[in-house]
Image 1: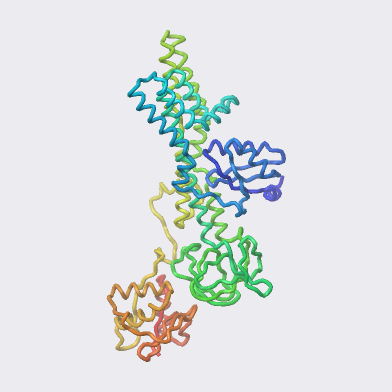
Image 2 (image 1 turned 90 degrees about the vertical axis):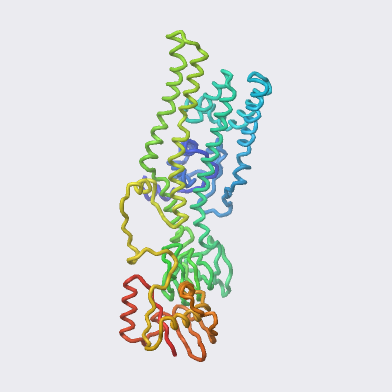
Length: 520
């Protein structure tokens, strides 16, 4: 089968309910066995499955029935993913709380009534059954099919502890496993949510011109070629090309640029960016799933499927370690009594202890959780890591070279130079007039001027500004004491001298922007 045909048959679904890597692997195997499915690949970190072939949503959910998995087509927004909060986390894992409560009651009862008391044993038994029900259900099923994983290992250990009367140890093992499993799910959910929160950057609806009217349309229904109206202060919902209007657009969410970029006809704009000043009419050039923001999210999610060397080693190690530790425990339990006439009870207990202590839960859980959490948190803070391989390589770096127009920006512009060209005009006087005018503007560069004025303790608040006007894409103007002032970039001053233009270019070569003031 050609790669093109293979990709054409690919359908991607989001999966809710994954509890562990092994469960994701089992689900992948079940889907591969479905009639009409050629291949399937689970991305546990992103909670997604790619299915190659034909399979209905009902068939896929039936394949994941062992974990009560719920599936949603990747771009279907009709069923929102439930957000995990501390309260919802406790509600979802109330069985762990109940199990822990009965464990505490059992320990208290044991100290007061003795180990063999029926009520004490009953408390431990309830703790084991409530806290370990899901564990035993999967562990026993795996044992019957001779599939050895962590849950099989834990199930045998707990049953053995109950047989030899070590109720306290059995209950403690169950509660620790239940807590570790709950925390794993919580950390994975939080990591996935940090990535999905990128989707909230762009609006879910946009103003579209259709049939002579301007209507609010969901982004999923917007087609290529539609005319989108973006008002000042609104976020841009779709990628497109400016057809009319002029404005400054804050693209920090996409490009990381701290200073807004001036946009006019024929310029490209991106979904998730903020239109700050003017009204823009934009022709949509990409569907919602093909926008730059969607591709960024897709790259971050797919990055998690690429396993780091340490994760690949851990996964391979766990595959052989579990049956090996079970064999070692069996030999410890059998060899001393059979060949050295040792006490059966003592050595069975020792064998069960090896099973419990040797369970590699933390080892297997730690690596994928750490990698997914790191990639997710980095994405939320604007850093895109292409996969676990590259994340792991960061640990060995000794030096980093940055290429960002000669500087590293902080996302907060500041005044670096004040150069006066008019004779008899001091820097302090220039800053006072500029700050008085800029205090009426909402432009990010205006905030930088105001911060500088406050640092210099300039009393700009006392100055009255008349006839203030914002010139989108160029600057501002207004009058003070009957004198007309203009502040802006070179577009506002086409007639400036060659010396001033050269000074502006010199500053720009240093990575600085230009702002000129003219007294009329």
